[in-house]
Length: 303
Length: 305
Image 1 (tube, one colour):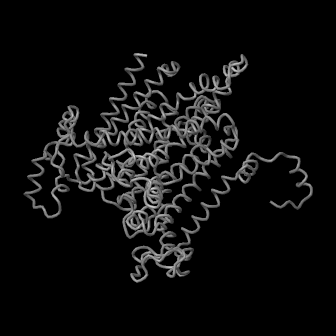
Image 2: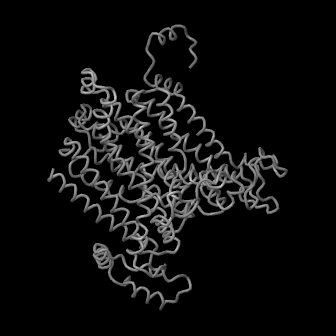
Image 3: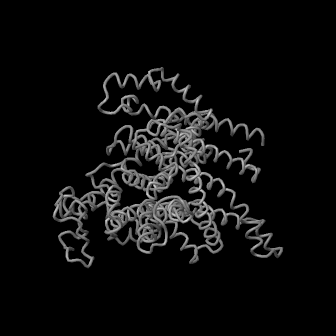
């Protein structure tokens, strides 16, 4: 904010920076946070602008242009027309990669949202009400944890039939456990605090206490878990698609691209290196952002 | 201790029953299991006879109790595809997956505990930063991509290790690393955090003040307490690895439970799928139960919690 008036400028210099401003300062000083944010914004922008920046149609098969290597390869076939080359069906790899970012981000975000709603409801209910309610919530969490995620996910997807929304729902219904565990612990810590007791004493309804006293105070942990789970969901989608039980061809999911190129990887290693590196970068950026947020929002926990 | 053990055991049995109910209802997700089994070209009579043969015509509750009762005696029915008892096939494959899980866990612990301890001794040093980097990279790498990259380098380019099969120890090197690497960050972080907490306590200061040798303080006093939470994490992670080995086993064609699960899903072999999910879940429940008991024994404070 540009300060033009000398009087307010002097007043602001005297006043200490607000907690929010200090948090912003820490965020911009945190190398991991900045790096993660920059990469994630870059990938998000590419996904959003894919129809405009993609040089070709990601589904367009040109059979006499199969397996052109990326431009940095010392090959006569390499051309700037296909900067990342073409796949075994002659589809432009860069365009598929750009459209694949949409699938990863969409599935990761949607599955994370579903699991956030379920996990937060279970965790906050258990943590706030305690006693029998907590016993039931804890039981539900334990049961969910004992089911093997990948196995149940592929079994369900194979039985229900695979589509984008099925993958999102199956993942969302399976990975809420961390939300529940963290929210339960965070709510328990707040339950006995004075401001909650005060709200109870003046007769606030439980819904109001949970929504306006508990939730704002667990928001930081919630956002950190959200980043972890979004990264988790993206990796699971890739693994599911790699096993052939996630996103179906011809959609350009990064996991599916690796799976389709598996048979050719001994001759053209870049076919799996490129989508793999893209997955790695996306998950890395989300994790860096999450770690950064944890440090920035709770500096007292930094060790 | 006995009261804690009994209460914990009761919860474990209840969880196992709930899991069995979920596993059982899984086959009804596709609608009618008889139709799924009969295939596309089946006539109405074929479906009806399959329904009667496998008992899908009975009330669901009767089917569940019958299935559960048999499962408790170790009878999971016949595999639709292999025409062999499910239990027999599973217990033939189970040791391979257990071995893979044990190797992967060993790899993960051997890598992560020393790194975690070193990082805690010198926080913010070069080693600490290196450990953190390994953790961050490990968490971001898709395990199947890491496995394929290893196959490409160690198997094809340098021809150091066999890329498929499960016959010799060399076959287990790459799969164990691929499966175990994903676990290392969590174990390392927990070891580091535990060590940092313990090293700041009064009794460590006392031990140092009375002149004990640094590595006696470190290993006999500090690590023994810091390792307690790592025990239960390792048990939990071992359970996750058995469930997650499906991806790694299919890549390396290891004849374990994960590969069997993948094959069974391809073949729509419902009893086999049910049994694998149930066996792995019950194994996980057993593992966490044992880990809790071990923890309560190591740290009496937990028993009253």
